[in-house]
Image (tube, rainbow, N blue to C red; front, side, top):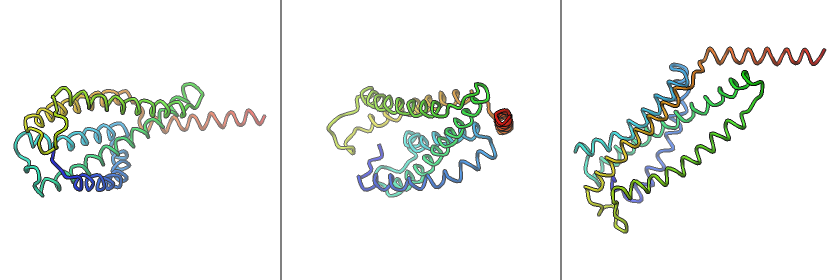
Amino acid sequence: YWGFTSGEIAGLATAVFASAFLALSLAPQASRRLGKRRAAMGAMIASMVVGLTPMMLRLAGLMPPNHSPALFWIILVQSIVSVAFYIAGSTLTSAMIADVVEDGELKTGRRAEGVYFSASIMISKAVSGAGLFAASAILGLIAFPTGVRPDHVPPAVLSHLAMTYAPIYAGLTAIGMSLLMGYQITRASHAETLETLAARAEALAVGGAE
């Protein structure tokens, strides 16, 4: 879409490592201020907005042309920031699963972190596979040409790609946000759960000693 050379693409992939360091400070600060659910939702929405902004600006004719030096640096910064928000959101989501494990233990009397995290990994793999299929389907839907150099793809096809990709991305993000709304654990309720579990474990230990 941006007409980058292989060297520029390699530079983008390497620079995104900086995203992990940004997320390392972003995730805990956002969690403390907003709570895990709101912070995770905010991070995912921010990742989507930052990720789509250059493409939307290109459609509006407000981005530098391909092969412009300025374009590479704009996309570089955008990629780092967007991926940082995504990593932060994913980190917070994983932390939410850990809270659900303890909430489940309180309700059922059994710890099942293996089940929860295995299910999370399975869903992630399934979605990744579906994503590859969906990407191919989108390219087929817009009649993306095959066997041509990236800089020879007609501008109309690239515009069609952006106009197809953006609403799908936004729609999938909206579905994810609606699912996260089901997470009702707060910092206070989680602390109460930990206290109850600790008291229960102490009572069992005392009973066993007797």
